[in-house]
Each structure stands twice: as C-alpha cells, then as structure tokens.
Image 1 (tube, rainbow, N blue to C red):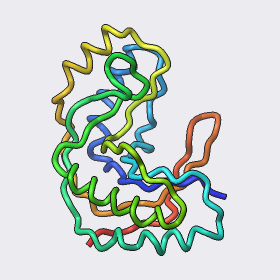
Image 2 (image 1 turned 60 degrees about the horizontal axis):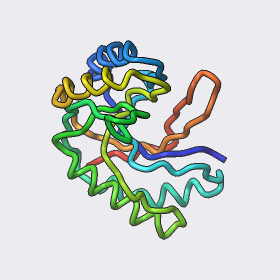
Image 3 (image 1 turned 45 degrees about the horizontal axis):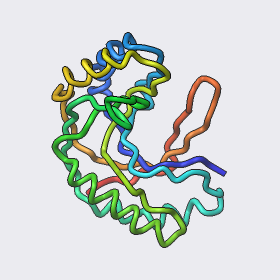
Image 4 (image 1 turned 30 degrees about the vertical axis):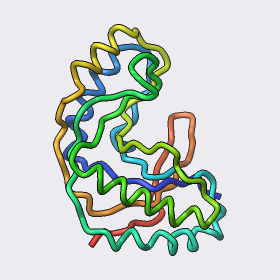
Length: 182
C-alpha cells in the first residue's frame, strides 16, 4: 500500500523566496516548516492505495495530460482555518487559480467513480508551515502585512501522482507517475 496524493511541484527557482518567508514565519512561534524540497500544491489527497490498484488509478488520471501548460503566480500569505485560529500557513495562487480549479474538479469527477470522495472545499495553495502555537496578535499582523506579497510565477508543465512515506523526521515524497501537460 502507498499513501498517495496528486500535486503540482514547486520549481527550485521559487524556493529561495519561499525559504526567506519561512525564516520570518518561524520567528512567530512553534511550528513545523515544510522542507523546501517538499513544497507543492496538493490537488487531491488520496490516502492509502493498494499497489495493485495504482495502474487503474493512473489510467483514470491520464486525462490530466490533455491539459495545456499554464502559468501560475504565487501571491499572498494566508492561514487555515483563519487569522483568528491558525493551524496552517500558506502561499496563495493568484494568476492560474481558475485553471487549477478546473483540473482539480476534473480529478474529483474522474475519481468519484473510483470510490474517492469529492473535496468539499478546495483552495489552491502551497503549505509553508504547520503551526503548534503562535502569538495571535503577531500572526494577525504578519498575515495582514503579507497578504499581497508576490513570490513570482512559473509555468506548470506537469502534475505528479506522489507517494508520501511518513517518518519521524517528516514525510518523504517520491514521484509515482508524472502527467506531462501538452
């Protein structure tokens, strides 16, 4: 069995900007930063998949490759569930979020017939940190000051089916299959 998810990878050239903001975030309280090599945009978390069902899953997802490459821009720092109670700090997607939503809905549509539940609320984002404890005033100010911060843009050329192996040092991600965009 593999623990799997579908994701858009973050290119290395943007990770320098992301690392800088992570350093600033880390000063706000106790949190677990996402390792730079693990930063991605999750389109769908699949959970545990039996090995013998992976090929069927890949076949069902092959439609992803029919999508054209597209540009996305990363903009603004936000939090889930919200600024009053912060558990996750993320970077938002500005340009290209509509295209991401279309692809994500397509994945949901395709996989619902394979027994996967649809995502009720999907918000395109790149997770930066998981918060353990933080000063509420400081985090509110930080979020407000950085809600329009620009991180750059990149062309999405592929979407990956990923494996996530849990370990004491944090998750270890590896690519199961790459869907190249046309």
